[in-house]
Image (cartoon, rainbow, N blue to C red):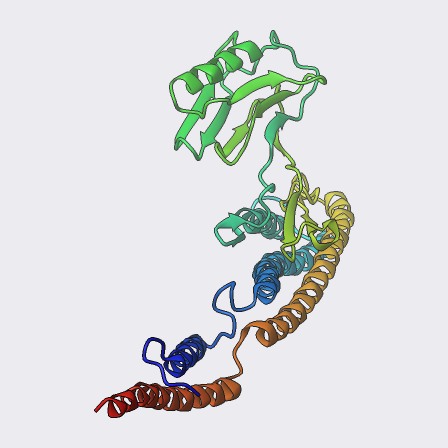
Length: 384
């Protein structure tokens, strides 16, 4: 082998090997500090793509699981409220059964009156439960409020005369206002309509509140929405009692997805929650003032109990379905996490062994580079 001084091949070889060792050592230290085998696309482009896709799946499934849990919470809240309604209706059955028998005293402060007062209190409490049962700040029976109020008397016209001295009252929760119309001699349905329109203009009633006649000639006052919250009452015999028209049903919708665009992977579980009020249960016009009324009420109450029981059964089935879906998603997340770990996470034992190897190679590489530099000094001995 010839001696040269222009190029030190052994030095270049040692330097190149040392550079590769330091690069591998830096990569190993990065893996130990992050716990990840793949820290950039250059580490494993295919593995990074697969791991990121699985991570997106896990994120969607985890949130879907939370959606399902929230849905279960809302449905269980509704079921708890309906359970209390069932208890109230069972008490109403007792009262109606007792009032259906003769032998009770009648009149003011009588036994029959006491039974009816408690029965009416039960109906009020059912309305209260429907109005105040909330989950996460929203009414569970969000459509329990009537859409409008209408007179029991049909065949009315704008020219129909009202009873002089009668009073029609409309309260508006949104404005905090109370509109009171006392009919004078000669006042008609049109007069009441005009007065209500004036109350809207004055801000006493919410914008959009109207009084119209429907196809059967009943006076309809509304709409009653979440932005208004009106209540209507009247003692005018011409109009008849003002009854609340039942609201529409509410839906609890839970969206479940694994984050892909596949239609089969995106599911919506919807549960219909019936509106809850004495009106929706067809109990609002009942009383226990006579044995005949009590017996009619008993039939209606039993029907209401069946209606509530059917609703609770539907809610229970949906709860079971959501819980099953949540369990499946939990298993999916667990398996995806395991697969992601095998692709992306660093094997600490192997990584530490590699670090030890590269540390030793770095030390020997530096020593070899030093020796290769010293070898060039031997040339000087030939020219001394």
